[in-house]
Every structure is written in C-alpha cells, then in structure tokens.
Image 1: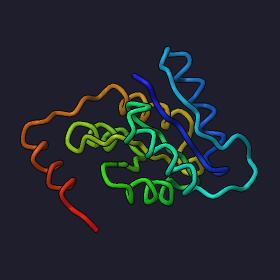
Image 2: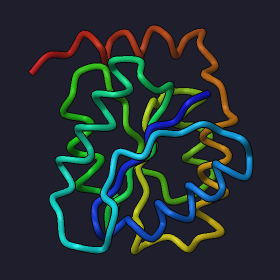
Image 3: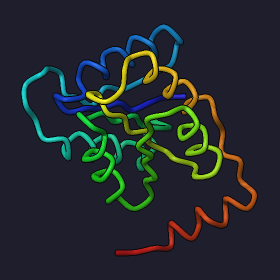
Length: 145
C-alpha cells in the first residue's frame, strides 16, 4: 500500500509524526507538503493528495490541517473522493468498513499523537466491507453538483 500525505502549517507537526510511523511500519508514502510551519493555504495540499488518489499514484491519502475540517471539505469537493474527518478510532474503522473512505483527515491541533496514530493504523488496516454498502457508495458517486 502506498499513502499520499499532506498538510498545511497547522498539521505539519502531526504529519511528521505520522511519516515516522509509516516509515517504521514499512509503509510507502509520498509527502505532498507542506514542509515547514510557515503559513500556507490548506486547499492546495488537499487537492494535491486528492488528485494523487484519483490518479492512482497512491492507494489512500492522509490530510491534516489545524482542525481537519477545511482540508476535508477541500478533498470532498473532488468527485470520487470520500474523505473522512476522524477524531476517534470507531469512526476511522467505520469510514473504511461502510464508506470506503479513500482519504483520512485529521486535526493537528485537536488530536494527541497517540490517538492520531491509532486512528491512522485502523484506517490503513481496515478493508471495505462491500455488500449493501457498495450500493450506497455508488449512489454517492452518482451525485453531481
């Protein structure tokens, strides 16, 4: 599995912690930025990771901004992306089991490192359940703006 990861300045520190975790687990990743605490615009990084997921450059994405809200809204504007903002492990598991989320969003100023890493681990390990959920995912994909 190959992961695309990106953040704005509010998520930069947590992104670096997650990268260390991915490396320790032997999980390949591509860092789409940002690369410092300097103020940047989260939509730029949300779009980069979402595009990489859609273009199959990576299998799944992880996005982080201060709250996770803005960057998840950005990703979800892109057809074919199902970005789940998670702040607990149950939501992370269900986002994969029932919603086949292809991007996880986290709040770098909201979550502690330990909980964030637990959420990431569950998101990456959980497979889509399919079945009745497949029909619902297809309905989501049919919605146009």
